[in-house]
Image 1 (cartoon, rainbow, N blue to C red):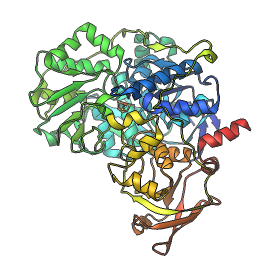
Image 2 (cartoon, rainbow, N blue to C red; image 1 turned 30 degrees about the horizontal axis):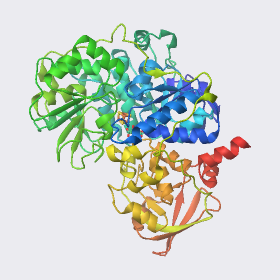
Image 3 (cartoon, rainbow, N blue to C red; image 1 turned 180 degrees about the horizontal axis):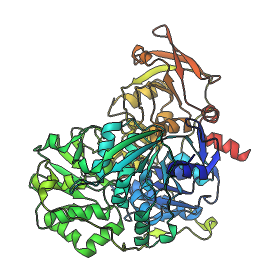
Image 4 (cartoon, rainbow, N blue to C red; image 1 turned 90 degrees about the horizontal axis):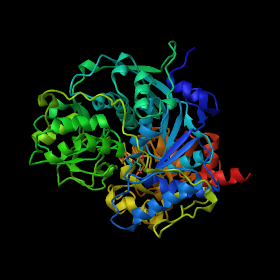
Length: 639
Ligand code: MIC
Ligand code: SF4
């Protein structure tokens, strides 16, 4: 039997386990990436492991999230990251060099390799045929220390692309259409692999837009084959030597096939407040728009911004709209500057932002009260923009720019001739903002500031878990609900005691105080709990507040792993109906002396019992018992 692309990479990197769907496989990791918002914690954990030099082929530390620098905190983190990278054999991409996923695709990624990143949009690398996965910082630290990364052997879904996109319809519309069909929980433990004649018509940045936002499906990753288009891209980046061809065998099979006819796709839009709340743009035409933001790791490539510049040339941004544009990397920004496209944007009234995440994570550019904001980003969770009442919609750069010009949601096909942007024969390559690690790391001193607090640890699991339900929440709770980001909270990422004061505040402002007063307790949630970002702070900070167990109908993959890593036991109801029987404030009790496949939870308040289960393999059970991965890894490494 032949293999598909995902299976080929898994097979080549298999360190433990059998490639049997649903079973745990451990994969060797070739490359890692971190960004500053999750990276400081990841490196603190790496330091705690006592490994002098990373054991990967390549590890890169990026600074792209926390760059507002409204106080000393961000800059302290940057300085720490730079020194720790130099000491431990890690490349350092300086602030200003661009968004991690965009830069990694341009400068480091390679087909057939595995990449683990402490950011949920790491699957961007799937655009060049990498098996690129997001994880919590601790898992990335472990990979840097040479440990394999464990996933559930995924199902592979074939997304067969036929036909060719029409003018003004682009890659974003493809992934929005897939989200409409598959939803934000459709992809758990699945890999989406793109096939069909439509693949050839998509450039690497377009493919990367699709694999990037595949994260919103909850998928393990998404992947394209590596073909001549990939080769041309790598050649234009001056590193054709990193190219290799990677295609599914003709006899490869898939667990399911989804077909998308590119030719019949129309411009699409995700309405507030979920990336799968997708409709045809035509349904919303005429809605007034107050803000347009273009950029983020989803849509900030040279191709995207040249399209935007082409549409803007000679026009003025509508008086009712604020237009912000953040090019994805220094390479993109510099090329736009040199060919005049940046001047066209500036002349039209665009507000040019740094090459960072910026408004995507609420770092500035928060919309006005109740504003309709059209963004080329990948997430529109409530409040993420920094304005709780904002109506954030997700769109392609084409749709975004049509709105910026007309002041309302309007069909970009009315803009006239489509500026078709070809991949340049040669990108402008200058890696002067990427620092190589020191030759002799032992001489490098690590620089810490007062904002950098050590990573808190947890005691081994108690034999009897007792406490109150300190919070009950609905379905689809995101990590933005659990641990909000934004300009005020993000600078606290390297200080868990401080950041824990913000846990769940958008859901219930009293939560942190209650958790502390009750000495921790239980959280009860609905399905797809913890979707979205990979931020391990959404597990780490609740752990610090004393959360002992999270009991839900189902979990999102990365968050489940993060809870395990920090010793919070993730359990699900055997009978989903039991969710309705528990109320906030109920007193619960559970014997955890041995963690069996089914366990009994006693509700002392109601005088009832419920059956719970879990998906933890024996190793994960040991991790929970040890009080988390760090404690477990330390014990095992010294053994
Ligand atoms: C995000 O898009 O939410 C982030 C910020 O990039 C996160 C990581 C983080 O919370 O630091 C992600 O997607 O993993
Ligand atoms: Fe940055 Fe936004 Fe991409 Fe996350 S989704 S890495 S915040 S640009």
